[in-house]
Length: 483
Image (tube, rainbow, N blue to C red):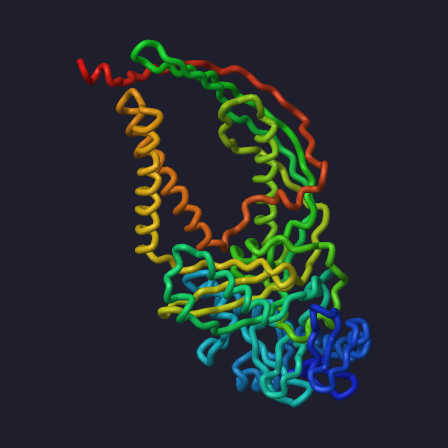
């Protein structure tokens, strides 16, 4: 038998409540009364506690195989589970894992259909009695029948209860406007995309994140080179001195984020960083009305490899930055050891925006606190070609003018290298930059923003000369051509 939700309604008129980021208050849509989160939490604390206790008892019975035949029949009739066990959550994750891309995975769980019933839960809206069905990890949603916010019982209990939350500051209108602005200035964007595509779905979601505190220590050996070049007759001589630069050090990190929802694309969640942690506040359900919220389906142990990778890469960058006084320094693999001192769970605000164009899905994520928006856009091949050729021809014409009008290079190799090479490099570099603006949903590789100030400690350093060698290159000149 489906359990009842806890609906967070106006204490005065029982109308729907919405949390407003600009005021930090919950407002009633009907009578326009306002309440602080503390007032709303106090009003519904006892009811929420009772609903959670009943849900926990039902889960315990289900996991022990003690569900009544009536409860099992009700679940079969609904096509979804009335309790959320680990098996139900695993089934929800499995649905997303079958998708061909991270975007398809998100959409497969964010918009269920009648053929996709695995990993779903059902419960009753306590306001109107309607049966609600959602993804197993959806903790709060709006009842489509009465418009009230329905908190699924048992969603945030025990280890699933977040420690912290950052409330939404930006609303739906801001998210839609930011997406419109995001299209502007994208040189490779097909003209028809901005004009023809429509936003299919916009949702404000409190996403569960794990915040890791810890340290990384390790060592690595970098290959460094000093290079000197001079001219000897017809030859250009290059002398290279090679060194091994060994470095050892450690660094401390605080609150490296990794989302704990398999539903959310990791690259989108990483790319909307950073959040302003100064606005972290103790978790309260009262911040959630007006938005959706997710319960984690990936534990801190399952997600920590992402934080480990970022800490290791950051330490490698820090050690490399200490190798100075050389013309070239190659990256190196650093043997690092990572340890965690504390892990907390926080709900962080994210706007998810889904659009479709030419039967293809495009997903965007916006930081609901800072307004940073990311997402991949379609690229027009014709615009890429036209921009490349245009830049190449313009820069090429400038270089020819400089060559023949001012510098007048002596040898053919230099002339070709400058007159053709410089335009090629400029055109390619500019197009690469324009392309990078089209693909902004990228997983983070480092954690420099989360290094504790002044914590990096260089504990060992040694530079050893390895070898030196010379190369001689025949340089063709105009005099050689005349002979």
